[in-house]
Image (cartoon, rainbow, N blue to C red; front, side):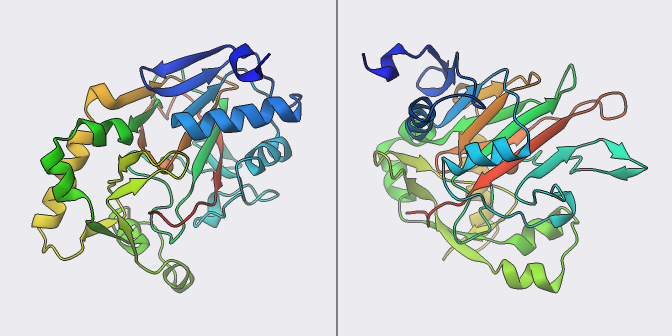
Length: 281
Ligand SMILES: [Fe+2]
């Protein structure tokens, strides 16, 4: 029997994402895990609930998708496992142990790099009763929903991405080392998925300075218009977190953001890993 048909799954929403049941990542055999990875590459996002992964186990699982990527902001990395980025509002001895407010605006991860993150994996260790949802936009559905004439006008445009622009907007520390490590980069607005060639409207905010060859505010206005189009309700999957969830999304064809929660009375604690990607085409 084909193992893919034997596995119990459910779409996260019509045509996008898959929840995979009955897999315990920490103890699953290689064939099962290969099936999980293959499902990810075809569906934009996967969810596996009820997982218990310590840092080495999460890194081992991450390596099945590719090379774990480093993080720009070292202050929030797990000291023993620097490729694990800690998202948390917990403090220990008065010091924050993680990034208390990661990713509240619509974006795609690591788009300020030449090789943006292929995928992002979040593993929830502690979740508040409300809020801190993760929203994913299906950028292939977004592209398909554009009229053919608009697709022709947009295909071929190039966006100017900048770590410096992002850090300045978010008032994050900007060292000479960060400037040197993250020079401005240029990526296509329309991106082809390497698995099957499907196209995505690969727009973003935060890191984007504008559109190459288009003066601002025209370029920025176009980006804002496209982001508003791409983040309409019909394109969005909203992940409601439970402790033990593993959510992995494909940055090559999605846009995402978090939502706020009551950080005074509740704790969110998440381990994030990134996988190094290819140059967007
Ligand atoms: Fe993000």
